[in-house]
Image (cartoon, rainbow, N blue to C red; front, side):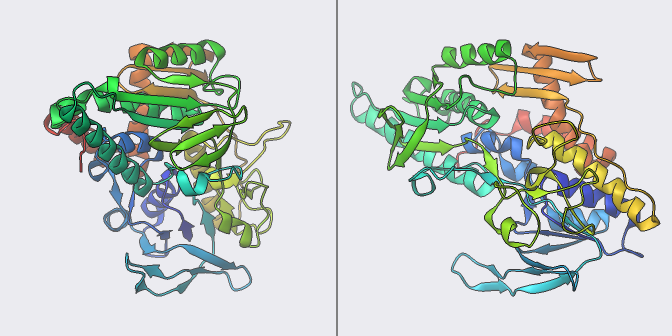
Length: 430
């Protein structure tokens, strides 16, 4: 069994497969281009410096030794469905020298869980001038640039206390990533004065959110969306709805009305799509390069190939839209694929995937949390804010830890996490 992609869904799946089968009669392989995993919903905190990814990342080599699977570093290049093999591209170092040559891995069952990338919708200049938050590497890059700009402003203020030096950040997209990043930036800015930037604080941070739709956080109700917008305004975030960006320039965004919004840092968080290579694998995909799957999470093209998470597209019966690309969907899909792999080996009928929307929660850093709970948890829909919402939001990450580490180790890591929040610096500045 080969699982390509060590994100939330893929890592949870290989943990379950390893715990179930081990290495005696099964060869379970995880393939990922990176050496470690970080939960994607935390990347905005990594970008702002509020979270040290070194403390929360999961190394695949250590994880596989514990759970009885093998790990191969590499990027999926092609699939030979007749020979039932996948081809991995060579792994190169920072200088372009080959570390690991391209090689072939055989499979009986293949699972694709490679996640998603930001969708720039073909807007000119975005790829050249904007930053993304799809990976830890990109989040680290944003943090470095952010700290450099904050240092520049701090030095300018020290040289001339009357100078109007500011750090300007423009975020395109008012979904969870964009809104959470905006709030987290102000949390980080407030703390910087205690870490060597004595004359810098949140008043020197200009953050603008540009949203093409009529309101922010469309996954939430209008009431909760309005509450989040009010909180953002209190922080000092400028929110511009119904503002479509048609071009990105060096340090500037151009809107459909001709407005030019200057920014030192520009973040594109306007939606996701499947990676381009997914459209070259010979599998049925949609216009966003997501792999089309059946109700059993098997691809339309090959029943021995499953797909889950953001790279998969499944539209339930009698619904017009596919399952949204969320962490909870990847978690539920992984559970269904695990069950169906067991059933497939026994020749039993496979289980149909049923998505249960648990709701959406948005964390505005330490300032506020808003969201809605849905389904059997509350017997309908319930709007939540404040401490209760924050507690539930925190529990989502704890559930993720349990999913990829099991109960014993997961609980231990939760305890370690609480200790780290007390003894470690509040910001990562390197």
